[in-house]
Length: 379
Image 1: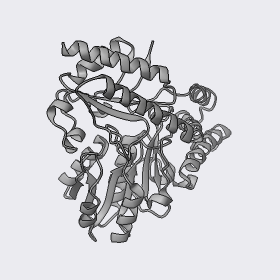
Image 2: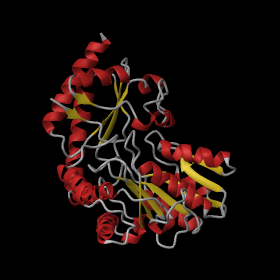
Image 3: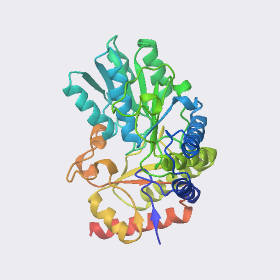
């Protein structure tokens, strides 16, 4: 038995995507910058994928820049967007992904002013505080649409409208890696200048992502080379990965509404079962404005790492937080700290993240195993 509930870390790729990647890598192996037919064929594969992803974002294919993943997309948006601006001020939230936090730490060391906006107990950004921070010097506001640890959904449309009303020249970047193909995200509705998305979060291959850059937005490259992708992200493209990403985006987007509704129902089912059958449970995912696939729960008197490995022994795979921070042994979740959680709850927190491959039977089995293991560990 295997029940994979760590889909916010990565997802199992669709079989069709694996076949697409293999076929492209084996048969369509030309360099897309070459002028012969092999190169032109590879270039066509990239253009097809760009069109598929653009269709999900309701934008032009020319506004899609392929990257190595969400981390690079975030870095390109932050470094490339801010360095092309005259402003020296950046605004973010206190619960962003490490790719954003570390990039902004570097910018701060380089002389930029970085202001993190606070959040409430559900992880909601303080919009009044945000409005008060925007000035004529604000080059960029960057926020995560869906928090990767607790699943809070930021009101990006409201945030975007607020930013542009205060300073139309301020760039708005959305880290939509956890939101993409789970909940709607379109740049026009959100007033977004840049949006980061990633392949392996939507059943595509690892090592490929994309940054939407609104036409006319000034952005400079952060790496230099042969001038590919309008010289914004030079280097020979990962043709096979990009082709797989395009197919995964099309498949996931076509079934987004159905799959998201199903995941939300199963998430609520799991939450109810854990809360009603186990004492000392604290639900960290907000009841409102939360993504359909993430449930973060704390268990009093239990260490999350011990519970994680006990579930693993039963064939159930979960997370104790963000996979991108898991290598920092002993470090407590800054996201859970930011929402005001006490250490006793942080120490026992587990993130369950679902996909379309999870069934009601999987949820019932997981809830039973968690109940039995928690009772055993507490004894």
